[in-house]
Length: 435
Ligand SMILES: [Zn+2]
Picture 1 (tube, rainbow, N blue to C red):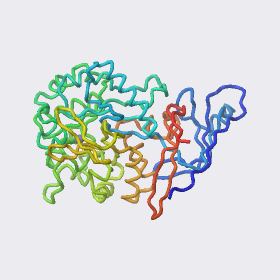
Picture 2: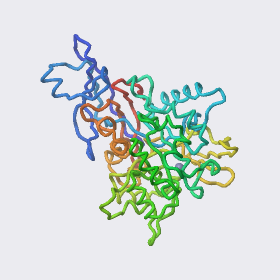
Picture 3: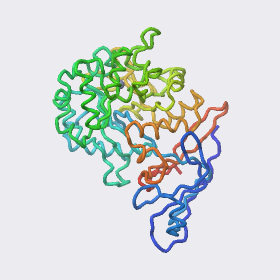
């Protein structure tokens, strides 16, 4: 049984000028691993979080609007670093109508996605032939520069999951388009298009297999171009994975899935979470907490090994939100959807997920005993840090973007918790209200 939802009200304060200053009050703010009683001041003009003390006492500016949250949680907007598509649109498919229709499709996803609490994300491409990257990437780069809330969720740049992946750990990726980066950066440029690797690049993150020929020099070149690298879809041994991290890789893509399992004498990629080496940093790692990809206990073990590295991702694809049935997939395959479970018709392999990010947070709390702020960190501060955007996204500190989610914590009989998205604010403007 859900708890009663606290009363919601928005009160316009007395103000003669139009400062655009909004004060959230009576809320629990997500700060580190704690929930803190407090107020939050934001500007709907600059779209940023303000220093409330300074506004009130130095500038003597009264808020234009006071938003009373009735004791609910105020979190930074959620960040999904692996989203393949949604609402019937697939980032990896150029529509027959051409690239202009593709651009419109991306905008449609952004406008729908923001209502789920995901205020920024990395649109993710599965392994494709070069022409798909070269047509799609110009539409997937960072989209927030206009700071326009009506555009919905903001791309922080594309995540290219492939095609430099191991052919024996391809998962749902079409093995015939996989490549080896034999010539390092030149191979990458041939595939993604040279313009797409120039700074500023539309690409924010590339998943690749570090054991492939040319992979280590590719990692070094990418990270020097400010493109982050994640290890995934890989046969790497522990030593090969460690070499990838030494070369600059800072993340592991959907830990446990599409990689060798932990063996006590060869811990594989997972072993990076237990490394005692001082020469490398433990990488961040993506976790799909949908109840299908991973056993809850595996998630808890990974979290205990490296709590500050865990990033919840949906890995959701275009069938999210569609009715159960069998659907045509790319490359002539078909996918069976039964509830949240998506499998390839030909071999029963897991073909992706249809879960929402806030439900991953709920699952993670219930499966690991993580507190609300600890679980929210895995979709806010931690992914922001991985992307080097910790001062701008995933935080409620002054100067950061006012991307906010109002969450209601409901409790079912038996103690299971559930987080529900009540409101979403983008650049200091309310863009979704469940009421
Ligand atoms: Zn994958």
